[in-house]
Image 1 (cartoon, helix red, strand yellow):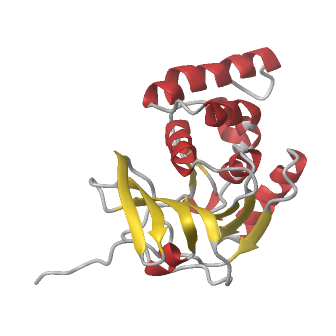
Image 2 (cartoon, rainbow, N blue to C red; image 1 turned 45 degrees about the vertical axis):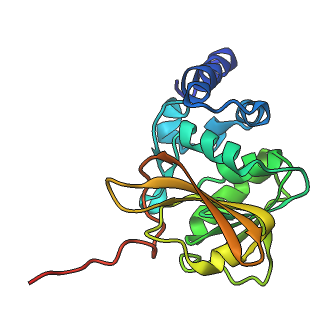
Image 3 (cartoon, rainbow, N blue to C red; image 1 turned 120 degrees about the vertical axis):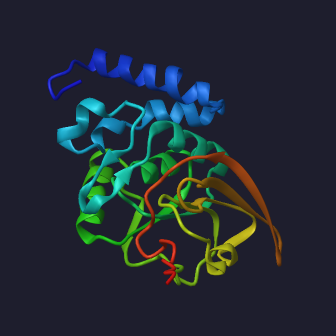
Length: 224
């Protein structure tokens, strides 16, 4: 696919992504599949990689950041099960694609990005694509995001060595949090559900690999 590809070819590529990559990876939630059809992934990909917009790949962004692969995006959205009107916090805006998907599912989305230029680019794309209600913030959220709000859904789009307790406590009762935890080669996509005031259910979803959220890398230990 290139910048002059016809709309018919783009829609066929989108269909193939959903039916040949995402659905076979156990993403069966009709709402999620519909969102992946409706949100134009190619509009969030950097121009030099637009021909790979529907490939089963992580795609590069500035500052060595990435867009997650479509299958991981689909599994994350399915696990979070966003309902209309829920308050959603995304950590790692990146291209803005996941924020758009969360908003399309009906979430009231706040998205935090460390790099101001990425946030600015995402804001521009989101507005062009009609997602002007997404609230974008800039800051370091690697150890938590102290905005004094709690959320029904939290999506962390970079891996972490461990999940800070502050994030668990930002979940409302029944709230869900997705994060990839661990270190190579043992990273696991994990869902946390706040079952009670002081109780969280932890569900291991699948093994994967994802670049670390900056500031959340494992501490290097030296031996002598």
